[in-house]
Image 1 (spheres, rainbow, N blue to C red):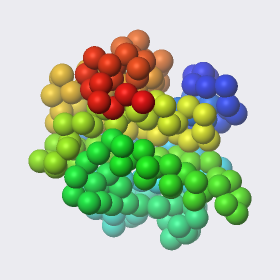
Image 2 (tube, rainbow, N blue to C red; image 1 turned 90 degrees about the vertical axis):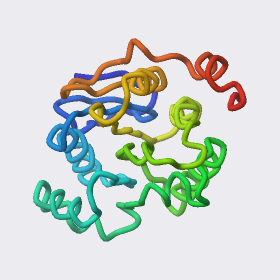
Image 3 (tube, rainbow, N blue to C red; image 1 turned 30 degrees about the vertical axis):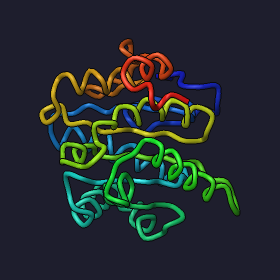
Length: 215
């Protein structure tokens, strides 16, 4: 089943029989590790098979636990994990708040620098996924997380990039999950991918909730 996410090239998502287009910002909602890994492992395996550059941020497991379980799931993927041109694993601090403070504008700069670094010598397609429970910690600036999620909808759509932001619905509040839905155009829930009816365009969402982060 195809989910039209942009006017870019179509690709297999690696989740069920779904295909989509590059330029997709998706929230993956789950209740337990099994449900999370059904999203995560299929997505990453497909990226290995397709030769994409993958960026993964684990939070609810160690890097070693991920490598063991993912290799068990996809033995052919093991060689990718040690190749930084194919696979990069980053901690939440490295990716989201390297200076100790979370900032949507700093994220814009960091992600754009990362993207530009992938254009040479040969442009790469990018699959990024992160377990977002790190955001439950008392990190300065974390109250602006949803502004960052909204701003990703400016950054991703015209790029060969897919992000799946993984949210554990048993750990986040209902109001936070509603904001997650409002800032992600597409959602995965119960193994089903849909165009998200709760999504609000970032111009409108930011104007109402975080006008200081409007472009």
